[in-house]
Image 1 (tube, one colour):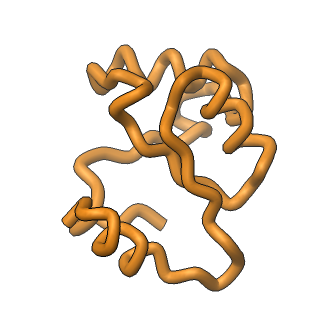
Image 2 (tube, one colour):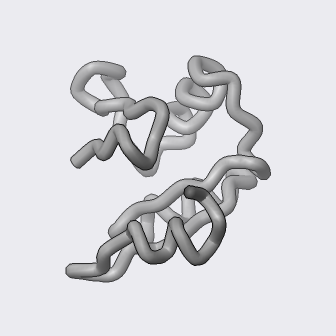
Length: 79
């Protein structure tokens, strides 16, 4: 679920009306949040979604089952 202490904003497919891995959801989010894909980290636990984001130029990270992402974010300097 969305952790405000790690992220500024979250987008929910049922509110946006689109779903990953559709490229259109990534386009919507980058425009709405004023993001640049190559400067944006996309994290997901589904490889199909990771591949879609990667093809659109996002930095990606595949979250493994039961992985605590806080450690990754800390090591990579995100907080």
